[in-house]
Image (cartoon, rainbow, N blue to C red; front, top):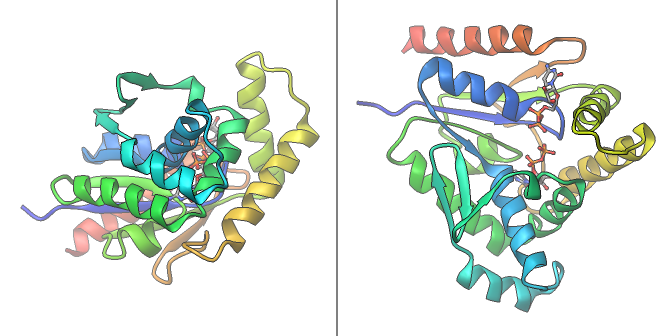
Length: 221
Ligand code: CDP
Ligand code: CDP
């Protein structure tokens, strides 16, 4: 049976992981969160006391980095990764290590090995452009920076975190800039991606829109 592949890219807070998880359920696809792998590697470096910007430290960490994906859970050795990789600090660390070509190669290998044997939906920054250039459906989610920052802010407030909106906005702005201007695999829509602007749209509306795009593609095949 032919495998089906969906790529969902976009900036922080555009709704990638929320939408990708639902799309995985609807179409029975394996959901892969590529950002979680960059976050896990950044977390590992910090935990080992390594320097995020030092090439030797990165090479050494890559030799021992061992991540297992079981269903929707990610394990660093035997540690289940959850809230500890979802902090703004680890988001920043992920963005720093993601500039390194050796790290990107490692993450891409992990993702492609799974996509070789499973139908998948993968979310990230370069899935449609680099990881799965042959994906059946490529979506690029966007939303205004204010709306994305508001979503992140609400998320943190719900978790009882003390944050102020301006700081969240600045952090997202910085990450957008770092991800879009880096030399290797910058954040940009693939030429054949469908751009979905989610500003002012709720989760249900976006899921329906993406679901219809995928159904249209399936019916054409
Ligand atoms: O994965 P990404 O950073 O692109 O975004 P996310 O973590 O899926 O979504 C960030 C937050 O925005 C979550 O709390 C979602 O529930 C929320 N969201 C929303 O309010 N409206 C949407 N259309 C999409 C996501
Ligand atoms: O959830 P959010 O959109 O904030 O970030 P994420 O998807 O968890 O990714 C964290 C960081 O990893 C991003 O800011 C990127 O620098 C990097 N990343 C990447 O370079 N390529 C990917 N395919 C996914 C994430």
